[in-house]
Image 1 (cartoon, one colour):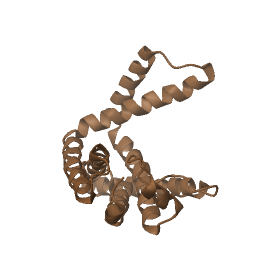
Image 2: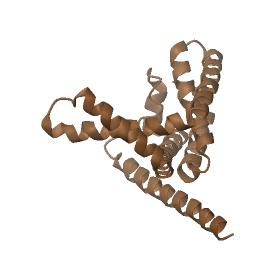
Image 3: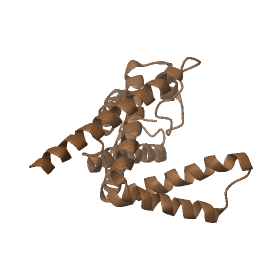
Image 4: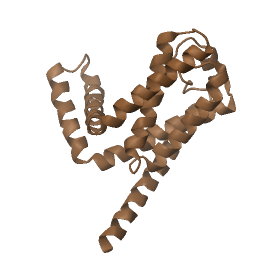
Length: 205
């Protein structure tokens, strides 16, 4: 977990990056990949150094974030294919639940490959949905941190670096998921409408 002294600016980054991803993820996909690569790289690097002092953790987070941003920014097409493969594997696991046990590795491999191909074929829609839902969740995490609610305080005092901020803020936390879906659907509509309008205008010209 990042030190308390830098959690406010980190929360602002989450909020701004989430808004950009949610409402302009398709048009700014490479930039979105860079932002999320930075966030993931910073989390991983800061977890590796542990509680080694504020400046050590911050330096490690910046270095890891820069590396993560570079990797995801460069891996544009790989990232789209991985999204499709991951969604395919997730769908198989969910569909397999009624039968009990785990799906055969060959089934997972085939469906993941099909998902990767489908994602590349329909990458516009895959990117829009992924960035809208991912960006909406990131926005809520940043907002919860800035408001300093119970979830944010629990995460701040927790030893696990991967818990940026807990998603569940207590028994009444269902509002978080309702807000997530509502914001994500709004972001999906904005992205579809904006991109569609631009394509129509350019076609007329």
